[in-house]
Image 1 (cartoon, rainbow, N blue to C red):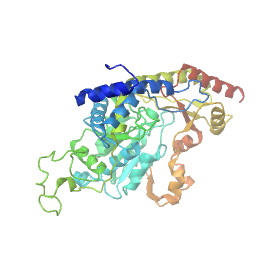
Image 2 (cartoon, rainbow, N blue to C red; image 1 turned 120 degrees about the vertical axis):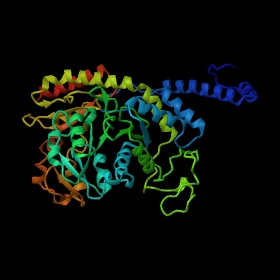
Image 3 (cartoon, helix red, strand yellow; image 1 turned 45 degrees about the horizontal axis):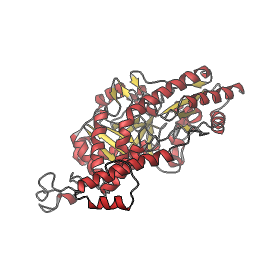
Image 4 (cartoon, rainbow, N blue to C red; image 1 turned 30 degrees about the vertical axis):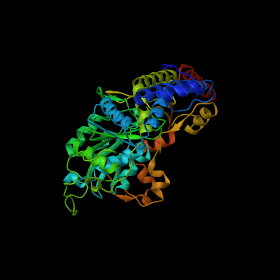
Length: 472
């Protein structure tokens, strides 16, 4: 029968049943399933005649499908061999010592902040009432873990064009209670890592890089996600690579790695992977807390943690995606360049994005800000684009402090170098301290650069913009 694809008839099934070697049978069946998955994918792949260009999306082929089938055939339902491979290869790609997968980028952010509250960090731990510098022009799950850990977010403004934290406002916002900086590389554009790291070292602050939108971006020839004490990644379908739902936490610090793993894995002290016991060789020889000596290390808990692991199916998809990442990055950069060239004629009324100095972004999206002197507003332009088949997205929350999550609840916060207030006390005077954040809310949106956007799509986008400007 060999390894060629065949639709099994009864005779062939009998031949398979007669194979004595389990390994040989496994190999033949998996090879045939691989061939079938390729045929299935070819029959079901996307229709290229789409009328709508979405701002983001996933790019899959039979490789992801086959990896999922392989993971299913393994019948290992939690993290397994695919996850082990994925964590190693992801860490190697970014250039860090450790990568720990988790069930989402939002969970990765929660783990990053929670880890810094661990008593194992001694005087360096974050305690209730400590302050963490961040921005309000971003995605809410960068800020939520700060509040959820009873810490105080300190909001500084962003720069228009890069849409990243304004590093010149950092130092004036630091107090004796400031213990960390937690910000994102907005839409793949690295924030000024040199200044942020310099200030963090000066004041002995933790740095968390939210790298969820920036996998593959570089700053001074190094990948983002390798600069901070901890960094996070998202593998939601909109991101650079996907595993459906999923994320990762990265670090070079041995102690932080164990703490993050503990918070991710129920809060337990043991670091044995699923299905393995006694990695430390002392499973029944520990004396921790007020437990009796010898209490099973697999059931000793050092933190109030979660179960935020992924399945091996997700890791299997991620592993196939990771192999394609270099091509995805180049395609995003190419699409960004083509869009920029096509839209620069409209700069009288639009602020086009600019890369941070010393950076090479792996763009997540193409941000555009409608200038205040334009004879139209953002909503008019966005509606026109959407009605003509061009997908758009807001720059996430715009100004997070104007959302019901803040104005309808009691959250302690600080804006730059002002006093701590309750979020219900927010007023227009407070918002004026973050003028660019409000400009992002009122004037900024983004369109897609993801790898399935092609030159024909870019040409269509340019034509739609041209038609809009003819009528203003």
